[in-house]
Length: 141
Image 1 (tube, rainbow, N blue to C red):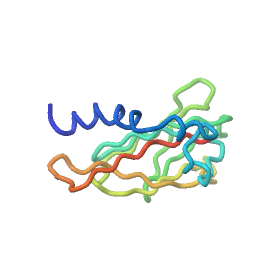
Image 2: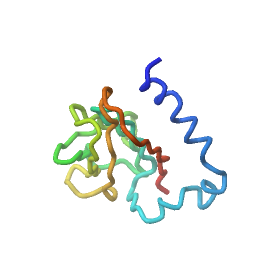
Image 3: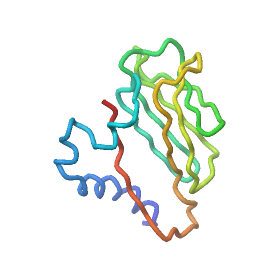
Image 4: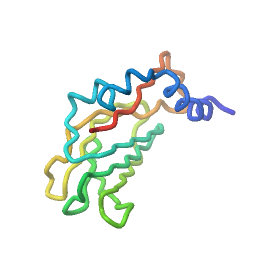
């Protein structure tokens, strides 16, 4: 097992083990979520590797057209993953390792569906980062 396989397998368990019930019980979300405008989002589930980002999103009501995820200056059209149009996924490839990207979800008419956020790709497989930081995901209300 290499370092990346170990991190992928153990990261979820480590994050869950480090969270206290009190930090999640407060309004059913961590405190950081209070200041972020989720718009019509119900769930936002990002997954990253060193060169890719997969974002799965669900909305309280279906958007009028295919939403778009902006990753920096690149636009990725969403792919509907249910029959009602409330669940979508966005797959960004060919990204730079260890870089912070600004992401934003937009409606087909380019109006924002939620407040933009930052997400970083993992370092390249041959890089040895000096620090590691694990942050837990925030579920919009």
